[in-house]
Length: 463
Image 1 (cartoon, rainbow, N blue to C red):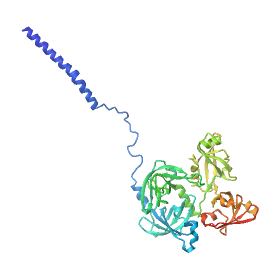
Image 2 (image 1 turned 45 degrees about the vertical axis):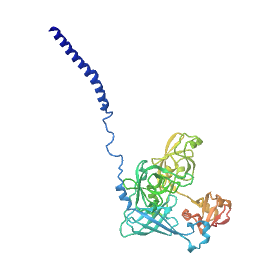
Image 3 (image 1 turned 90 degrees about the horizontal axis):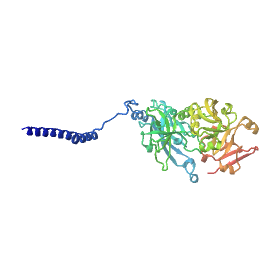
Image 4 (image 1 turned 45 degrees about the horizontal axis):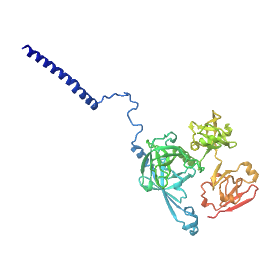
């Protein structure tokens, strides 16, 4: 009996111990491992939110589009004349047989009484301008003025009703990466809206053409017919006038360019008030720095405008700026390249005072500079200036324009050079820069010059 009891106890203890080992080693460990892989423990790394929980900028463009499309118009330019056909074929047409050319583009109404901003190249060589609004009403437009240098023109249409219009925005406050809309009439498709971002600012498309370009670059789709249309921000404010694209094919490939609204607005106001653009000059000549120029000029700066020469009697010289100084900012606007400087000065007028910060031998200095009226212009591949009182007295004349830089190879080969004076163009006397503005080379038939010795020379130009 005792033997049976003893055997039973040993069996029970062995069974309990076996069950314990099975649960611990065979069941719990694999089961625990499987559970950990299926349900891993999550450890938060940060419990603090750094954003307000909304998008950085609204991507709903419906309000901006609605504000803009009714103020963007279709511009049709009907033009006739010899400048519209190649020179060789003009021989076959009389003045009343010249073929008609029709060009189209866009424009932006910027006032309720019908003032419109567009591109100069949209209305160039016009005979008649016709404007169609978004509600399909057509008006004959009057050209108030145009500025080929900035490619801005101003039109006027009249109606008893007030027109919808776009408010000007501040293009200086725009930022790279900001959403924008381009509104225009590409391929005669009225009221077309495309979206993109600002890709770059102060963009100069050709640093060698002598033009003061300072475009806003975007990737909003722009094509033929968009010229003169609106570039607006997400609030529907006008921040640019769409002007050009960069393309190998003539179609949009990802880059479009707009004249900043601050420049367009200043040109618009000047053309209405003065009939011409009032440009203010610092009176400096030089180059925008890069690593190569910094090495050549033996300076450490690689950004800024390096002053090489000063125009005598102008604001920069009077303010104490000297050759070798590096302009770093104007009124707090950083100057990293020439387009930064020319673009900002394009928004200013003669007589205004700007604050210049410049680097001189490593020391940062500040100067107040009064901008002076521009005293030169480009005409027929020449730089011309108005005569000074001393020059008028020297040559005993009261009209004419002085040639300060000759870039016309044909005239140079005929003996015309720097120092000559232009007296007449097409048998009409000239005395101010506006007298030679907007002349197309094909329209110039003859020029009368006065040489430095006082003799007159007339050059006939045949096309």
